[in-house]
Amino acid sequence: MTEKQPNKYQTRVTRKGDHTRVNIPNEILAQVTLADKEMLKIYINERGNIELEVKKKDPNAVMCMICNNLPAKRKCINCGRMACSNCYWELGGLCRKCTKMK
Image (cartoon, rainbow, N blue to C red; front, side, top):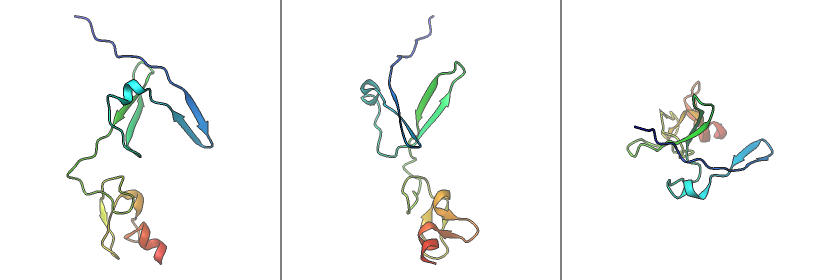
């Protein structure tokens, strides 16, 4: 039994300031649904090829009330907002919005 080889696509890499952008071919975009700021896992496989994995959000997870991009892990002691680790100051127990108020 032969192993099915994945389709191969060519694309371009562009750089703009500190950002590197890779255009995703339309054939791939037609097969997946990507939203703005969708989380992707990017890694190099054992053959040295770059692979992308779409990280789907858990529909039952409480999302961060500040950025709405990551699951919330902590509750702000000042306002009660649920925040992800990026939007929460662990030492102060405050969300990003409350630390800017102080």
